[in-house]
Every structure is written in C-alpha cells, then in structure tokens.
Image (cartoon, rainbow, N blue to C red; front, side, top):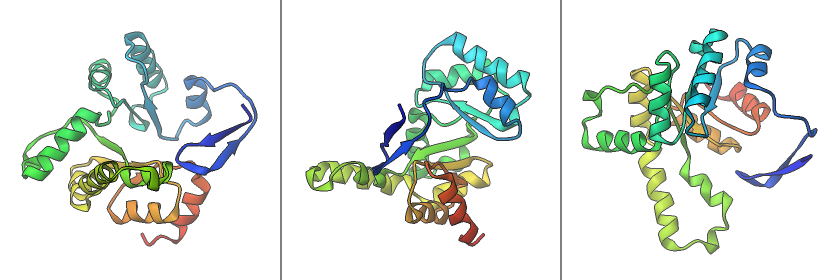
Length: 202
C-alpha cells in the first residue's frame, strides 16, 4: 500500500513506498542507541523467546520495553527475561486505578516499569460525536477522568515508573499530556512533537 488512513487522525493519511517491514534485528542494528517499545501481539512462547534472545544479543535490555495488553503475555515476557522492563497490561492498569483511588497504591510494589495508556478523550475524534449515545460519551468521559490524573502520574514517576500516553497528534493533546506529568507521548507526527517540545517550558 502506498497510502493508508491514519485511524487516530481521520482527516489525514500516510503515504510512503511499498517496502517490506524491517526485521527486528535490522532495527536494532540501524538504531543501536534508540529506545524501542515492543508489543508482543501473539501469545507464542517461541516468539517471546526469540525476541528476548535478540534483545540480549544486542545488549539492549536498558533500551527496550516489552509487553502487551494481555496479562498472560506480559507474565511470560517477565518470566522469560526479567532484565527487560515490562508494561502494565489492561488487568494491571485496572488494579493500579483501584489501588490509587482507595489510597493503597503507595504500599503496593509493582514489577512493571512503564505505564502506556491512551487518552480516552481522543476517541471522540475517531467517531462522529453526534452519532454516539449518551452512555458511550459518559463512559469515555469517566475513563478519561479516572486515567488522566496528575497525582497518579506524579506518584508513579516518583517511584521510577515512566508514563506514556498514546496516540496524540495535536498540540493541545501534547500540552495536556505533559501538563499532567507524562514522561512522554506516542505520536504519528514526531517532527510536529519535536517542534512542540522546542517551545514547551521544561
């Protein structure tokens, strides 16, 4: 495909050459000092083992984070190689929120080192708001209110847990994320984000 729609920016589309997807090994070789986030999409023991071996082979444990929304996959990743940081899966994010709102979070240890979550409010951009029911809008509002909490992000940061929010493509979204204390954001437009950060007060 030479052109595809960008799901998180309906008005945009991405263009490029119809080249093959590079191998993970090639990515590691081309960008030896660049942090890489790996989402293990399939619950496959061989896949997890092979990824772990590549990370170890290129000595990238300090530059790589892996995991998935699925709890079982994240557990397998951690068991396979505890030296590679893992992300919070959906089940653990819900646990995290429960502990935060009950005041128990400071007393509970976590093995995860990265929280990578969406900004729920951007869902309103993906669908036509006037076609959404009140209950759908309420659920989005509630999820956004519960997740996007500066106190939560500040607490996690103080514990050495990095917070990343995805997928943000507008300046107001960048600003909100960093104002809330996020470590960083994931975007389809890195140049646009770089320009924003150039002017954003440190």
